[in-house]
Length: 387
Ligand SMILES: *Cc1c(COP(=O)(O)O)cnc(C)c1O
Image (cartoon, rainbow, N blue to C red):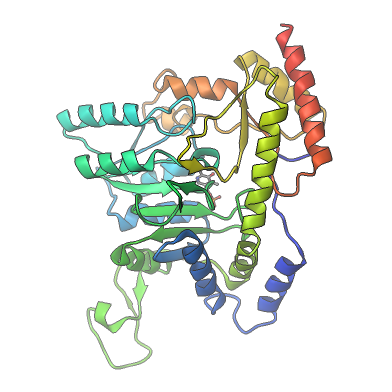
């Protein structure tokens, strides 16, 4: 089976991990901070906090921004469930903003309308979590403008978008979002097996994220309630978690960061080739604006109907091509239906979901594998056209 996404691990990655296994520190050693520094400087972020996965990063980001019971958090229905669950972990209420059908990112017109209504109802969200779907950045300038006008914070879920850029600067630089979250799951841009990171330009938020990552404990005398000259002294000043990333994982991440530009080039080539070779076919691609460049985490084709999508999915899976669907709208999950959401709530997201199919894209996808994907897609689409 050709998977839809897959990690790329080479000997340099393996050596980097083995080196840490032979060292004194498996966790909380020097490699974790080095990995944070590497991602921070790549993205142009003043502060980076590595954690055990992106879901943990989203949770801590919400807590650092003060999200709690009674607060409201908005996100996109076309995302992985973690983009919404993080608010629920804090006891907050979740709502969604419908997508732009061209990009599958949050629609800023829908967002503005919903904000106007929310102001009248005196129920402005505390945080908005826009998702850079498939690696294509959201309309960040417009979202920042609305955040400043209406008074909410932005957690950018850039789990797909490490290495993407917007108006010529990399995602995560801290110009638009208060906190940007990355994922290092094996199918994402670089991997640490499991892992995530929160980037910010705000020193206070960075401190808060670091504290919450490790039990709410501080060793900084100026943060203590009862400072003492005793060197063993630490204080738990908040209720935090153990969301740390190990040095073993960070070593893999560090090594992968050296390869990120190659990964991005490989993904861009594959995406360009798909767009050229699939152009004659009755499928649509996600729209790409001039002022941004995708990291091409996913390559989505849109079929003409739900029925065609089902046929193409089954036919390609049957032929050994691991196509996938990203995503089932979050509000249609049973857990969220129990909170009051129902089919019809976000029509653009639901229409997008009915037509979308992710076809394989990852750095190790060879030209011959890509030919197979294209051939099987052409055959399946032509079959679907007949009914
Ligand atoms: C992968 C992903 C996450 C969760 O990442 P983990 O590192 O697996 O916790 C969150 N949001 C989006 C959009 C993702 O794709």
